[in-house]
Length: 136
Image (cartoon, rainbow, N blue to C red):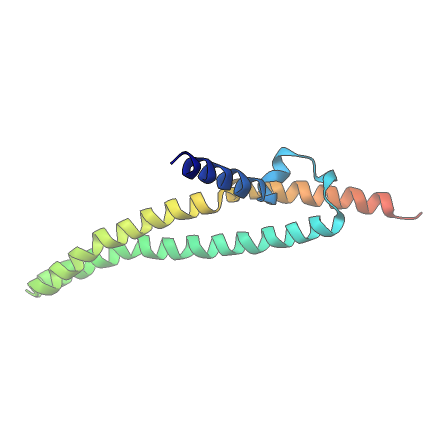
């Protein structure tokens, strides 16, 4: 049992150490080559667009709650009790999907809160290197 917890802890440490985007906040970008910085910038932009798309989908799921309430109200008005209960049953599923998805995105993509700072750090380092390598 000891090995299980130790292995799990080691895997978590290794996973955190391999997250180069978050590592940029802790260490200087001078340790990365220009090619790696360009790759990290491209990776950051791709991940940001992925997170924006996931958040947009979560917003649609959250906004669907008002649609289910309106549909339940209308079906109740027309005395369609079974349909009304069905729409009312969809509300907790949409709410759980929205909350669960939001937690998942915030845990899986921890870098997203720091994305503007990371992008700024990379761009400043690339600009600094560009100015150093330019010939008058």
